Image (cartoon, rainbow, N blue to C red; front, side, top):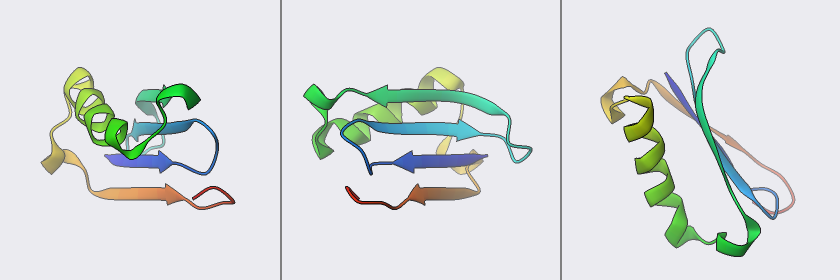
Length: 68
């Protein structure tokens, strides 16, 4: 499984994907609550609700861009 992170825009998004590219779960955090304090709880919630354990993750992908 892969944890994908995009913090390059006003909103930030996180997603869990299978190695095949199939989306398991995703969450978009609104601009109003966009700060790093919301990031880790959002990751924890995404893992929990998708039934994914941290040890199930084989990689983390991070988008880079103007707001990263």
